[in-house]
Image (cartoon, rainbow, N blue to C red; front, side, top):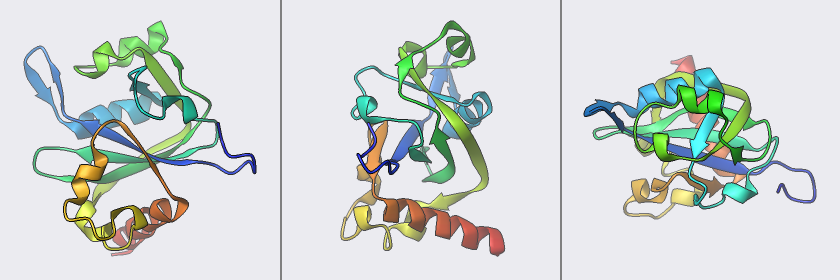
Length: 162
């Protein structure tokens, strides 16, 4: 549920490498699939799943073996709901194949270049003073502040201008 003021909540959705029939699917490919199909599959046990709401703003965080960072953004179209058969058709690999919920996007975009965690960790309030900032992005959904969200978008804008 969004705050009573009608303001959006801010989230980071974390995507990891998946495995399908013994083959690793890189997290970026999983993200590209989710952006193209405009939904995110979730476990019904995911922290914060019941707090997701229409208009909430999301950053996509890619956690690959050798590289971690932000690679897109989206705006939620509504609350999380049981995954539909059509959505399930588009889900590839584990762990997502075992997820039973989804949240749809009004908008979703994947950026061509990753915004590395190192490039924003000293400006994101959530990460200030943390020895291991990547540990903050374990799990699947992480609530962040509006300022955390803005820092990443500012870094993305600077990357585009270079």
